[in-house]
Amino acid sequence: MTTTSPHTPEALDARRWPDVARVPGGPLRALAARAVTGYAAAHAGVRVHTGPEAPEPGRTPAAADDAPVLWLRDPDAFHRRLAADGLIGFGESYMAGEWDSPDPVALLTRLAQDYENLVPRPLQPLRHITLPRRPPSDRNTRAGARRHISHHYDLSNELFSVFLDRTMTYSSGLFADGEPRDMPTLARAQERKIDRLLDGAGVSEGARLLEIGTGWGELAIRAARRGARVTTVTLSAEQRDLARERVADAGVADRVEVALRDYRDVEGSYDAVVSVEMVEAVGERYWPVYFAALDRLVRPGGRVALQSITMEHGLMRASRGSYTWMHKYVFPGGLIPSVTAVEEQLRARTSLAVVDRLSFGHDYADTLRLWREAFSESADRVRELGFDDTFRRMWFFYLAYCEAGFRSGIIDVEQIIMERAR
Image (cartoon, rainbow, N blue to C red; front, side):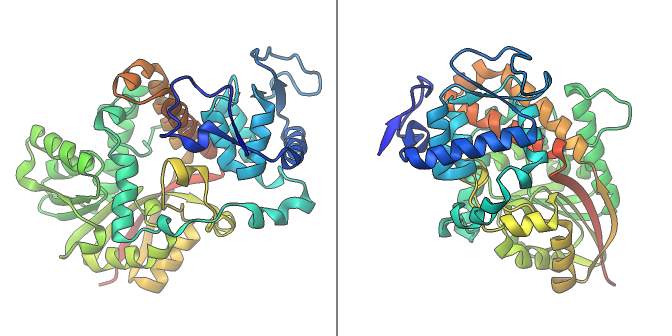
């Protein structure tokens, strides 16, 4: 039995968002979820506020005045979703407007910091039994990879332009110590990030560079301005089209080829290969193919520069088979690797050796904050582009959720420079 959430946004299209429009049944399981919510809130130092009116600061003596707030507008629907679908239900409940927070990032950060202890210890083994498992459609076959990339990156170039900086770079910037962390500075941080990767890969005049994962072309443009000849591949038609425009506008079209091509189908030998936050979309099943391709495509003595979001190895292993809210709504088919997993693939599949590493997860947290703020300020423009309020809440939750992951340290981002044996 299902019911319609009373707090579902008016603009919600039940055909577009069927699992957000429906609230699962199961009142007995919801009682258990209510108990777990109370346990988790007390354990993490979160203040729970119930009711249609916004919470006032410091009104609950059971928690510190600065405690992050979980505001349950519709506690019954929230607990039903949590009982039925775990963290998928948690995200869908936010999309439906059933819960909120005066500071969602602070709330999600606090929960992430104590993630492993939010469920009573006797119930923790049940996580692996009750969590949804990945469906076969989540695999990144060639057709699956095209579908998954299109799901996210072909939404609209205009959508991404409302919250990205002028470089249209959709990965972490690298800030310098002491500089302001605002949107104008983010553009310089993105250029610094790209230049560090190109330097690490030894990209200079006359170099033959392969980029796996084009984005919207900024890295290819900066490499071409160094005098490199660049082949860059993507599975997103929207990205390819805008990247070609930006390459032409930059005056480097004679040195850059932008191709709609799977990395598995790339041929040739290059002096350097660069891949920025692409490996997370590959999927564990295809890591051997991906890392073997890096090794195959770079010449002996050449370098590979990889930028990847990472997580602790034990957490990666524990979550590798889980189907999450992020898979369902944002990034189907992906898995964030650990540094250990990357090193295992390098040893088993390649002649590549790591020569340099840099982690800068705190910079990703600030990059995401700037994106989130720009996205929120552009709500009217997002609606003009045809995206409804449910999508807007989904995208805000995605950005806040990721920011909290980096602020809590549960995930990180690394630049890993590798060299192929001569």
